Length: 130
Image (spheres, rainbow, N blue to C red):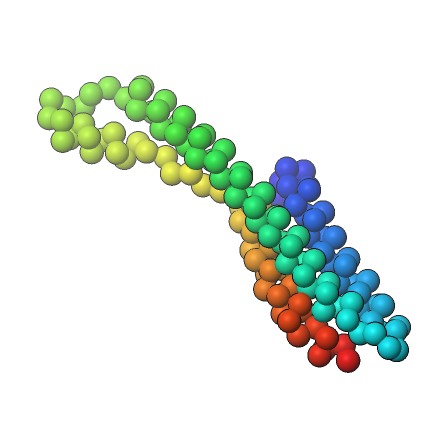
């Protein structure tokens, strides 16, 4: 996996997990106030949204690279026929679709899970700890 490329994103998610862990500890040790756990859900949602935004910015690079590769393929392909329809079909098969790497897909799924988890903690965390 390309952990070095997405190191900041993984660290942000780890920070969100740390916030939940610390808030659970404070709520379990505290007798009077049990609101830290619920508030940590907001931090987790914020961190996961930041990670999603950062991952979306990488897709522009994928689109640009796919366009460059498609242009190179189309420029190097000779004309196959005198018929423009046949040439158009051949050229359309050379188009490369942008594809996200597997490591980014995994990070995106984990980030989505953090958004859902953080929302549940934010909404119902005070009921779980009390």
